[in-house]
Amino acid sequence: MADNRINSLLERFARGDRLALARLVTLVENRAPEADSVMEHIYARTGHAYVIGVTGAPGAGKSTLVNRLIAKYRGQDKLVAVLAIDPSSPFSGGAVLGDRVRMTDHYRDAGVYIRSISSRGHHGGLSRATREVVKLLDAFGHDFIIIETVGVGQTELSVMDLADTTVVVTVPEGGDGVQVMKAGLNEIADLFVVNKADRDGADRIKAELELSVHLRPAEGWRPPVVLTQAVSDVGIDALVAAIQRHREYLASHRDPAREAERRAREFVEVLTAAIDERATRALREGADGTREVVREVREGKLNPYSACRRIMENRMAIAELLAEPRELKPQR
Image (cartoon, rainbow, N blue to C red; front, side, top):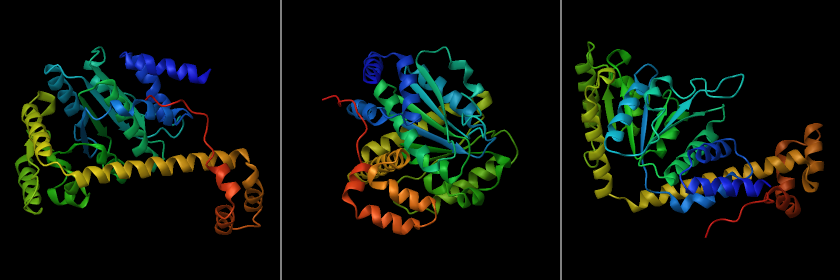
């Protein structure tokens, strides 16, 4: 029954059904047993969307900026998706900020898909969940996918590894360029935006950021600094143009080694997550090869390291830990 339901969703997804997309996103985000099979099924259709990451401190106006970017790309007749990475509710585990009320201008536009992803406290899992949702949105046919994070912590910065172009947003009163460098943003930024640029100090922050850019190695891309007033739609065209220049730069300076490394990292992440999920399930369900070991650990008779070694030396236990859940057949 479950296979039939998932296959039906995949067929509707292939026909452009947005409800099927939403349900598959939920399935993947919640790590349903069928999630890996879904990803295997749709993977061949990915690799076409351009991913833009938008990060920066809370209050920098990121959501308003993203709202303007959506409008610009829709004006080019492009399909746009937005993933808003939100903190978790300590009660429900859901995204506190929902689907970002500032983006309501685009809710009725069939060419825009907006989704919040809750971090839910599992930092390593957030990067994987975001990557897989990006793949789904890519396979669905979106031209641009914008990832917006709520802050600049290590969790959010790891998510930015998924972006082709990373935009770091700051404001005049948000601290100087040195603070940006301390936060590690200088290393990940492809573009800097000084938003709310009508306020005092905008030119100073711009100059400090430009100085930090010149401290980078001479070769390679030099991140430009763009002044914007997102609320008034000022500077957004310049930002879109800067993103396009970076896209063209990447296209003309392809690095096969970097692309290979990114694919390898994705593989390792998927593999280790699959092992973790299967082992956790087997231990929870009390597989024969591990039941006695788990009991001794719980009773304090066996320390975790000795328990780990005992299982690693037991081929039957390893086989049980890595047993496959029932899967869909991947699309050929």
